[in-house]
Image (cartoon, rainbow, N blue to C red; front, side, top):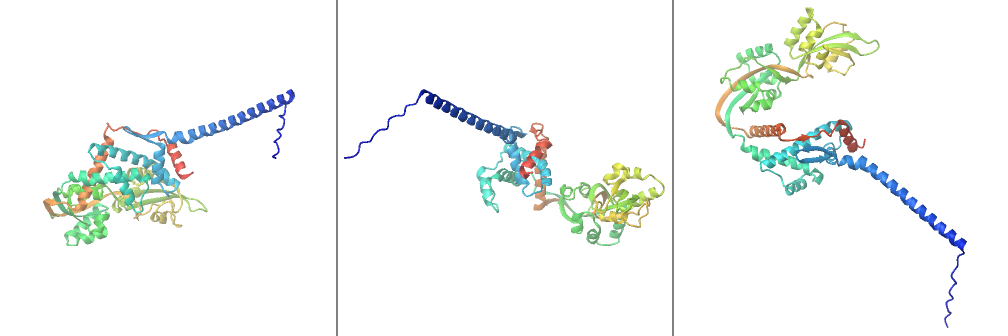
Length: 421
C-alpha cells in the first residue's frame, strides 16, 4: 500500500517574528520604489538631454519657402549628400551653398507647378533605379530637381526660343592694349592671316582656340559665350567685311597682368621682404605709370587709383611677404638677392594673374537675316531663358523665403554633425 503523505504542520510566527518580517517587506518595497525612481530619473534626464540636443534641433524649421518648411534634419541630410567625402573646411562652404540649393529647388518646383509641370514619384523612382550605380531614396529630392530643370528647359522653354533668327558670321580677337590692337590691325590690313594672329595673340580662350572664328551667331549668344556684351553689340551694328578699329572693353577679364614692384625693406637672416606693388592690365599702361613714378608722382596715390590688385586699398603696400605667397614672376624680382631697396622695377609680365580690360578687333564675314540657329546655340538660349525665369522667381515679392534661423552657429552645428567633428 502506498504511504500516506504526511503534511507538515504550518509554521506559526510569533508576534516579534511577524513584526520583523513585515518590516523587511516594507524595506524591500522602499528599496524597490527608490530604485525605480532613480532609474526613471536617469531616463528622464537622458531623455530631456537627447530631446534638447538631438530631437529639438533636428526638428526645428530652418528654411521656409512660402508654405513649405524644411527642418534641420532635412538640411543635415542634404548637406551630407552634397558634401560626401569632402574635408571639413570644404563643408563650411557647402553649408552656405546648400541653403541656396534647397531654396532654389523648392521655388522652381512651386513655379513649375503653376506652369502645369511636375515630375511624378514613379518617374523619380525609375530614374533612381536607372542611375549607374543606382541611387537610394535619400537622393529623391535631388534627382527630382534635376529632372524638373531638364523638363522645363527641353519642353517649356524650347517653345519660347526661336528656331530662326538674324545672325552674323563673326571673327574676333581680344588684345591687351590699344597700341597692340593698332599694330595687329595694321598687320591684318597688310594681308596677314586673321586666324593665325588670333591663335597666337588673342587673350580670349574661344577666339584663341578657334583662330578667332566664332561662326554664325544670333544676337545675345556671344555675350553668353565670352562674358561681355561689347563684342555682340559691335558685330550687330557694323558693316559686312569691314575690319573694326580697336574696340575697348573695360570689363572683359584676361589672364595677364603687369607688375610694378618696389622692395622697401628686407629682414636680416630671412627671406621676407616688405613690398609695394601696382598691378596693371597692359604693358602700355604699366610703362605709362612707371614714367609717372620716375617723374616723382606718389606711389600710394597711383596704386590706389590704378592698381588692379587688392592691395590698392593700402596704397599698394603688401606688407611683409615670403617666397611663394605671390606668383613666380613677382617673386623672381621681389626676392632676388641682388634687388636694390626702393628701386622701382621695370614692368613685369605675369601670365598667372587676372586683370580687366582690353581691345577687340572684329570682322563680320557675312550676314543672314533669317538663318536657322544651331542646336548648340539654341541650348544656350534655352538655358539663359530658364535662368532668367528662375531669377524672376527670386525677385518676385510674392515669394516669401526665410532662412534667418540658419545662423553661422547653426550651420556649424550641422557641419559638425555631418563630419563627426
